[in-house]
Image (tube, rainbow, N blue to C red; front, side):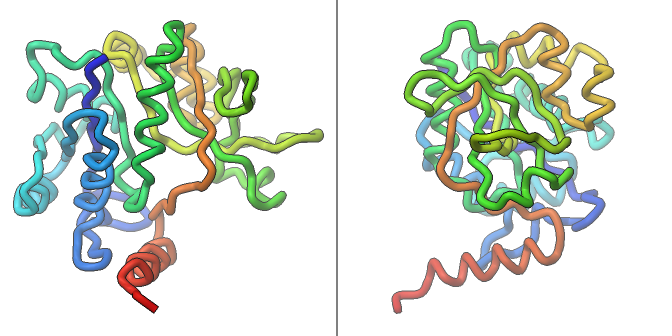
Amino acid sequence: MNPIVLIPARMAATRLPGKPLADIGGLPMIVRVLRQAEAAGVGPAAVAAGDPEIVEAVRAAGETAVLTDPDLPSGSDRIVAALAVLDPDRRHDVVINLQGDIPFVRPAAVRAVADLLAAEPACDLSTVMVAEADPAERSNPDIPKVVAAMQPGGRTARALYFTRSVLYGEGPVWLHHGIYGYRRAALERFCAAPPSPLETRERLEQLRALELGMSIWAAVIDEAPISVDNPADLERARAFAQSLGRTD
């Protein structure tokens, strides 16, 4: 396997416009995500940007960014466009799609999606999940859940379905976090297909892959990354960055 990590980013976020360039402890958020990706050590990392301001900020930090069509409909389409520029010879057979709004994502989570593709030949697409920390999370429609067939050892699972609905019964409810590893052919097939009925109904892009008959596997991570979706999340991320610099 020869992975590459690509981080889609655009300025026009509804709840927090301009968030890729939001300052977190002296660095733009997108640069923090990129450096966490590099720390994972799975392959080269770059930003697939929808706006020139993002490209300029990333390059000013000494990192790699590609400007893509701002009208592309999704982050997955954006990474396909960037991939065509960065790897026209198709040397990279695995593409890791890392969200640009998780500035403190653990490198181990990035490695987990690559390791899962290496370990499971039948896996087309890998991702991560974490056990619920609060029972209220299982009824929160903003938090996608994974209906998972756990494997021996309890650290990996075959994903059967993803939903925003409430899940009942004994045992943990697994919460999905959007780090994806694709085999390159699976990514291209996914992006060539139109949005599927279940994807549209649940507003969950990964259901398109399941409706296409792809196999999705999930690795268990022990801690959910901080996701920045609104101003309150941004302040929480800034406080966390400040705490990292403390010595007391």
